[in-house]
Image 1: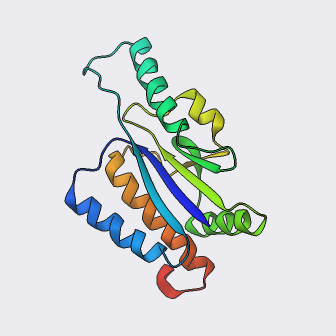
Image 2: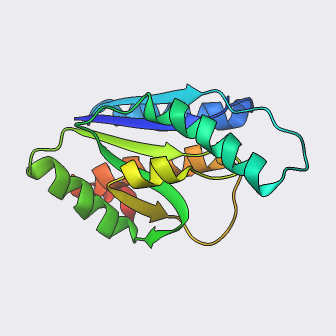
Length: 159
């Protein structure tokens, strides 16, 4: 089982890195886990709609270059489907039971994901309607992936 997070931008904050590293270490007993960062596109503060779409398109191409055809892709999107931790764990279990061994999660840049990335995704997932820093979302997502494996293992972590 391979789990990958493809995300835009570098993680700078030490405390986020430490939290993610802890969950990544715990995930090693369940899967091969990796985070792939792609560069964010530099853009001025004020962008026209066309400029915003161009930035998302460039970042989208970078993201898509890191995804293989056989990967099942979850796109993190504010308008995606919300799930409980239990439902998410069930989805992961079902995917692996029925032959999916490569699952990829995509976290876009500050402007969101390009239409091409959303089209490539097998499903969209939302962690609620709140806007969160992308660095924090990496940590939250990594913890939820770990939680899913713990739920599926019947471990008491989830309680």
